[in-house]
Length: 251
Length: 251
DNA sequence: CGCCTAGTTGAGGTAAGTCAATTCACGTGG
DNA sequence: CCACGTGAATTGACTTACCTCAACTAGGCG
Image (cartoon, rainbow over all chains, first blue to last red):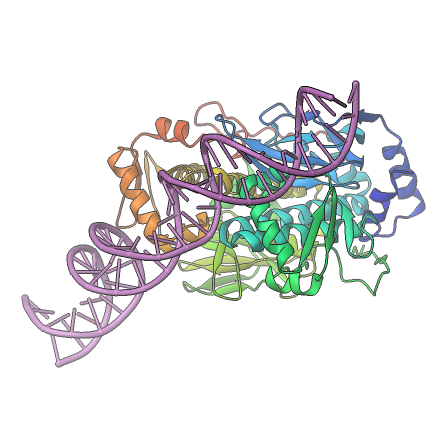
């Protein structure tokens, strides 16, 4: 049941009513697409078409410069909304590509607009997901603009960890991470060589390890202190493990 | 009539109907606040309260690290929505401060939620403004992450120019810019010393000048080419000088 | 077994940072 | 009107964090 990630995250903001639930179900039951790693789903500058919900796998949102330099704007995880801006801007401002095999639900971007009228509560949830992603962007900009290399890398993994936890994909202190050094580097505006060295420092400091595809955060509190990881923007503060089910929306 | 900036920008997306217009008017007629330069309007991490529309003056949205490093996430210009995320996240993720004397309209953040139900078309416009700002963030991240210094600075001024034009605050090839080197530096993740040197290079290249508070773009096409300025996200493509008045919204 | 991709490590270069001195613009008050 | 103070900008000298290039190692898979 791959759509559980999406439900999981959505319900961190509102508790869907039965009609909303059936709407959601129809949405999630819409056309599914399976994509291999490296597939280009959305191309920057292209006319906007569909939006997607990522149900399984990892993807990236990125921009490229003409000489091949790349900046990754964000890593997309299961449960994430993809291309939610296409219904407002008429061209997509960034590309989206898979980095692992992915399962996606495709739906027309206009559906989001219709939802605002017909399912305002649900729409609000989607807006919340959007605002959250914008918050990620802001944190990343802070990190790239003002953090030293080891703060950047540390912050990056702290954020990944928390996001994965929210959809149940991180347990204890570790998670599987299919990102190569190159991808991490392009997320943080640095070279993959320097990411490698920086990871070495973090390992020596006893903060985190990364072997094969498994990342283990050895001292999360210290890591968060050092990187000034706020985490405010990740979701609403929860009562220890339990999801916040009360709607913020008042009629 | 300072709210003209807001109308101006809004009407780049939809043409307000009479009832919408009166709603807008009541919104804009709400409590006005005048703020001196350097006033802190929103503090990062504080509980969310009001949203604002900036009617006059310049402000910044920024984050600070504990040792004083600062990253400016965006420059806020007349017509911009301020703190639009407070209605979704319960704490603000960044601070907002004025850099010139400012005139703002204050309104409760919940109003935005109510608008989604009662004025969905207008709400869509606000979402557009939001999406646009997110696009700015993405461009900035690309720039800070992957642009060399002179591309960064050039891109920054190209963007400012286009945004100011949209609200009628740039004429010909120049505009008034109250930003100090320090503010520019904190926007671009560099030191003010290096911004100064970089501006020297851009001047020598015949691309732009900046004396006193006036920035003049001497060769915009070349500047945009060099900085790979896309501009897609600024607004809808217009028919030469004229604003796009047709609603994208379909009932 | 050997190829291919990912990661590591070293050497050397450079873009950009820091520190500090000087100049400049502008406002204030004697 | 000029002296003075203040914040912004410029310039120089020096340092450094990070990059590039390149060689080498280690897994994973046909």
